[in-house]
Image 1 (tube, rainbow, N blue to C red):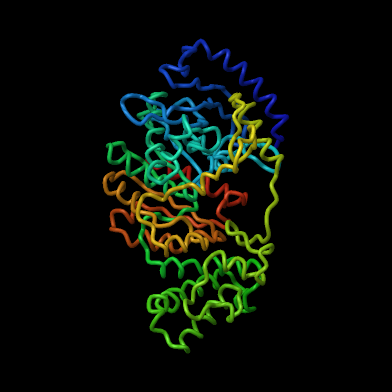
Image 2: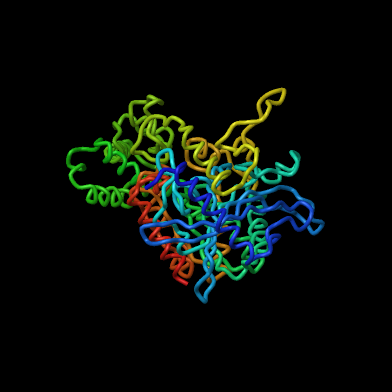
Length: 495
């Protein structure tokens, strides 16, 4: 495997030669600006040698205009990177649109650590032998305000910094991309991580209402949004992940540390038989019952019984992660991967490698700062601007104080809605793949399955669930990354 900087030089030279040779096959203005507000799209061609053979592909990097009405006024420019393989089969290749979450994060993790032909490892890039590009074309989308994506004017920003505006902009980007590049016949897949799973559901609902078929929705580390499960259900099914984490840290009783599979079955049975029923009638429990539940909860999560609130019999995510190592915030478990403790320092070399890849190998030469990777610009007078996350409006429903309190306590964004289920009811061909990490404090491996099983039979049978031995970014564990890519390859190929 070769580090990025050495490989990039050779790849870029080969790309330039290939592009020159290919210029005769396509009009040079194919992806040039066509109307006011459009920007040129940078196209390069590449060949990479993997352990599975050579892979030839085209990249497209640029920004598409987002317009809100027939007058064509540009409200934003959305940056994307697309990887495309010339179709050799009679059937059109699948086409995946992918984004991360936040809700204010660019699509950089899925892009550089999981799906694309080059993968970030350490401080450099290596060939991604298992890239999903073999099975599907890929388009990575940075929502407005992230990466190189920007609102056309500052006063337009609020149109995009909210749940519903974000969904609408994503659906418009997909329409614009398919129209610009003439790929409307390719089977359409939507892939989101974390909050990005909300974006998948909301966008799928919009597309279904427009009669646009979506072949598949891929939900990575976001559960089954919109299942409307009671808080007691969510609290109860957060326990198995904590048990797995406590097992990894050696913080369970000796008998529970002998066989993890047996311990996981035991905690699952306990949740079903004792814990969830107790939470459903918590106000009615007597002292003896409360003590018994608290003792069981502590035993399965690596805590002491006196750390459990006898009133609620529940401990929120942030409280649990801090309490696990004695209440010291500096030693708190990582919410995204509870096998780890303490803060992870930033890695400037990794950020630099990504920026070099975008501007160098992909040829998108710009002096815009890539948000979340680079700082820049002359400081403006007055207070520093607020982050997009702090300005985000969850405008899809009235948010109750209880729902917001749970979100602040580490329970994820508040009050998701059944967008995806509505899309599935309107589009009988829409299938769903759900991936979760065993050590992710924000996900429910067992709970995801139960949530989908509570849906009507036609919807429930279209779900595929997988639980991986990793965290929120389960693909950072090499065996899990390979397994996830194999599972995704099967999912998008099953047409």
